[in-house]
Structure formats: structure tokens, C-alpha cells
Length: 257
Image (cartoon, rainbow, N blue to C red; front, side, top):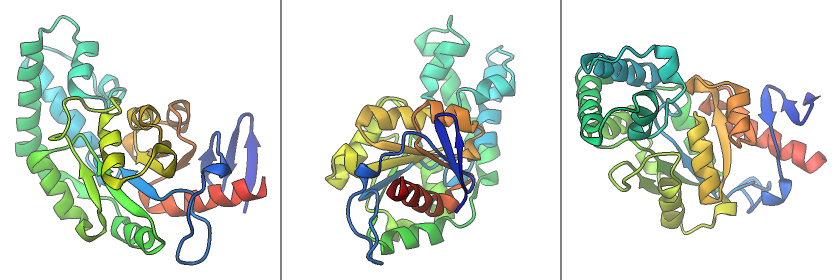
């Protein structure tokens, strides 16, 4: 295993580790090895399914219809942030009723024009199968809801591995508000230190921190390693199919530190 020290950060075979704490390991997997966490809470959009370009493009169109010319690169900065909060930042003069109207238009454009282009990332089912075989308990915590969530789950074919789910229908505010992750934790019956939240944005990591869980990131949402690390991700993988390799490397690094 190749370990490279880069300032306050450590890279292990392509994995970025920041603030890794081996004392958080809890439980034994079926192979007799120590697992870091009992619960694994996953974001969906941008993490398990490739939907970020479609989401941002549909939001851009909804904004154009409302008379706002906002560049894609600007919208990328707020990918994964609660939709109402995003509009408050990029169009601060909008009234609450106007924001709701734009968000409704966004949802309609996404569902009618872009949803069918969304695809599952490779290796997701196999990763979940391995994770649950090793004793991990799996939850989903996603702002997604309704037809979008139903479509995403149909692509993933992972229902048998999901123990609990918290979605946009369950809470008023999306990430980085921690209540969505907290709800998943309560449904799992775990405390924060027993679980890790895996997502593709800094807002997933901030929600994890607010709920008291660890955070791990994937690079499939368009954010840099530095952005995810700065938000609190202790481990970062290129994509979710490499998550277990990344976490195992983190475990090995922590055990040998």
C-alpha cells in the first residue's frame, strides 16, 4: 500500500484521508476484520446515480424562464444545497413565493426533459452486496423525493440491501440541514459515532457533521478533493464503487499509524 503525506492530509493509493480516527472503528465484519462503522448512510443523486448535470441544466433553464442568466459553473458551486437556500444566494431579491415557483418549474423540467438521461453509477449493487455481507447496515438520506426517487431506485436495484430511508418527503429542509441524516440515524437505532455519511458534495459532509456522524466523499458530484476535505470528509474515493476499498485503506492506515 502506498502512503503519501501531503501536509495535514494523507493520500493512500488514490484515497484522501483527513483527520482519520481509528478509534471510531466499531464491530466485526463477517471476515473477522474490524469494521469502522455499523451504519452507512448514502446520498443518492450524484453519489449512486449520475444526475448532477441533468439537475443543474434543468435548474438553469428554470432560472432563464424567470429572467435570470446564471452560468452553469456558478450553479455547480451549490449542487446538493437545499434548493430554496440556493435561490436565496444566487437571486437574493426573489420573494419566497417566486422561489417556490422557480423550484416547481425546475422539478417539472427535470422530470419531463432530463430524468430519463439519469443513469446508475457502475458497481453500486455489488458494493452494497459486499457491504451488507460484511455486516454493514445501510440507509439512504436524500433530498430526492417522489417520481425522481422512484426512478433512481429502479435504476439501482438495491432495495433488498436498504434497511431504512429518509428522503425529501420526510423533512422540510434539505442538506446541509442535519435533520435528514439525523432521521436516518434514528431509524437505524444508532448514535452518530457508529455511522458514516457518504455523499458527493460538501453539503452532505456538513449535514453529517451536524448529525454527529463521520463523513466520506466521492468525486462524482463535481467538487474537488479540497472542497470535500474542507467540509469534513475523512476519506474520499473517485466513485462509490471504490468506497469499500477506500475505507479499508483508511482502516489499514489507521491501524498502522
